[in-house]
Image (cartoon, rainbow over all chains, first blue to last red; front, side, top):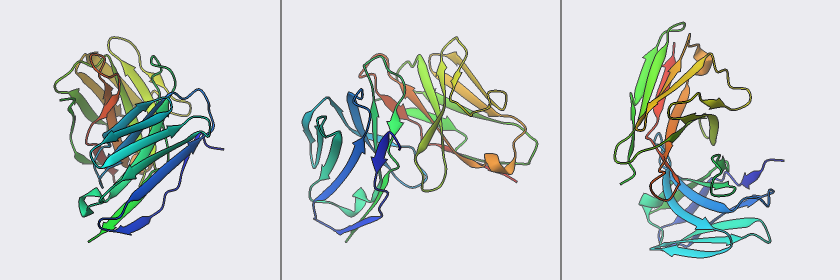
Length: 112
Length: 116
């Protein structure tokens, strides 16, 4: 079993829809949770960063962490064609921990 | 802020030759940099962790003699793929940990290596 599971998709939605992306994980030691966006043939770009359980909002993006269920989500409101990319969840243990563990990534397409 | 560059962005080399990829943190200091490998439609696989002034720590299954990492300064790490073979063709991405900021990793744009 992988430490972090993420549905690779592909996921295709119409412009303006609310997109829900999620990951599950098995190691309860993870405390820091990130979402990265990666366009084709580019490096990942940090979108959201959260610590422990709770919600965090930044513009059209909302990240949720439920540590009791070992489940994290990223919501995109008013989705735009420019949001079409691969979204990777990542997580790590304590603040001094170096290693990020990534999900497989979900390929998202927003159709105009 | 938190910009990481990689050079070259794309390189083609012949089998048996070596190729060096540079990773630079442009506007912050990074005592730690990471090298990842990514195959098409797959996630990032951590190859090694590079600490400035010390030897890199390689992940299990990564050949340290084939993938040479040098982190000579707080803003530069290099990955040298020695005696490259076609199976080394991949997308190589570095990241840098901003020790002066949020401690998160910021990624470079990646280097596409094709070995013929």
